[in-house]
Image: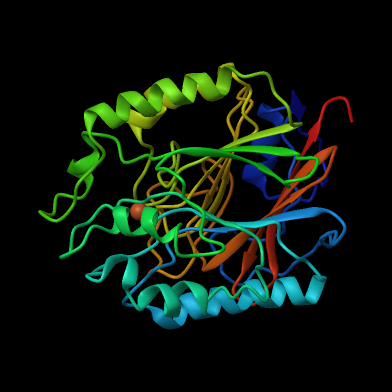
Length: 342
Ligand SMILES: [Fe+2]
């Protein structure tokens, strides 16, 4: 069981009000409006190069904004170079390929938008993807099948199934990461285009059975995270996802899941709920066009920023540190989560 601790009292009024509501929460944040893209960093904790790092980003495989994808990828490389970080893995939080990918596993987009964009020289570890709604589009090719097949072609892209579990780092793991497919049957209404599809009812039931089995296993790592493309809770344009909340929120609570990691909304967020063991992270700033808020992050936070960027999850034996990083490789926001026994 983890608990938050207060790291810094210099938080905005909304966060201060939130902290009063939630004794277990703590965040290290920066002063200023959470709606501004140019907030000065007041406090900055340097990443620990001796710790283990998993970098994550969602909504990156854009067609219309190639410069934005390149900018975030450059920031990831710079972040690793500046702080001597060799990431254990990359976690790709879905909407990995927008638009047409008619050659599927043979598409040139694999080289340009993945291999060269996130090169093994900076990111030598495995790359774990989950599937987004834009991956569930048929444009003279099935991008879900292409991404499963690319596992057999790549030394890094690792997607053994639409849902799977990994432990990180490989030796003496600290984190169990359960990767899920959040494209539930019935969610097609959100993307009503004829080329969109979703997982079948049978796949849905199979995943649910598998998930309960995974969560029922005795914990073998200090930390447990679940990753999927769609957030349960989001202040972004897509809002809260009632179907996912109904299905997964009780499981997150019952099994004391530490982090729920997602993309889908094109922004960076951290959400906490009083008494809830899970911290909710949205990292959807990988390149696609930024979109506005449905709820101001100041009203239900603690934090959100409409910004391009990625997220660094730093793992140590006693704590998790989540850092949202901007396109200039600057820390925009961070929070920590400690084991209560640490
Ligand atoms: Fe999405």
